[in-house]
Length: 398
Image (cartoon, rainbow, N blue to C red; front, side, top):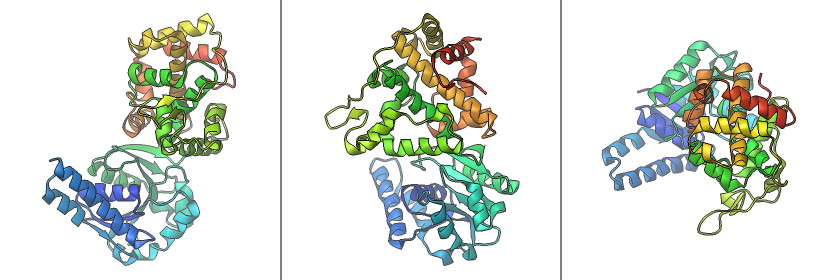
């Protein structure tokens, strides 16, 4: 039975431990606070108990999985084949915590970081294990979400990358290979879903509830951009935006939006504070954030392009009011364009980007698959109309 070490017993670390143990691996769960490691195991057992009560799991299966996880110490890593780090997003803290474990690991152990935003290359170099350090980015909750971004650095041995991808696949995950670049695939390509939605609100195109409804009902997203950012937390969402924007030399299409940053400044972070774009204190959320401009005067060229684009999205999108169609076109073309730029910048190929966006954030289609589903010329016309209407070159393709 192979052994995996998991450093960090929070929600993500415990979730990864559950995934590995369910796949038959022996797991050593470590944390700076050893009581946290045991609490992580107890949490897994508690979640299993609820599944057993509902008839979704047997007691024997639950006992077998939990029995493969132990709250360990560095000395427990002597036969560890893979060590996954899942602690706070601070490079110095990651280096310090992993450095303390290196002498306890086999020389051929693989070190994989679950970081979502930091340089895996820098981590490997600072650990002096660059040839055996890669990224293994799970999505929360790890036992449920299918995607793992396997992040390759230019120093990491290709055999290590292939081994990690094989492990993730055998653990029941879908792998998307990507380069070690800021935001990897998902956290970069997803930015326009939030940013362009807020810009449409600022421009007075539509209210949050109208755009959320269009993205859900007409474009088949699980959640609209505003309700999703309220769920994520605007502090978390804007921090990721700023990190990706800064790391990619501040392109205008990834620039933070004033309306969202104002929510953070006011402490209106979404569901966790009771208010964000929506007021969540009542029986049902009520949209309270309004645009900063009156409804814009839409040109015939823009509305014609938006109508053709909406018809290509769905029959329901084709019946939306013109301003909502324009907003829908802006959000989707923002996603398409960022996918094009990510491929251009060498982050990943089109197939990996489509895989990441469908399995990592449950998009109805990957951006490249979606672009290819439109009739010829519709997407090009949409980009041309948006480039003529929107300043700052946000819809300039690579």
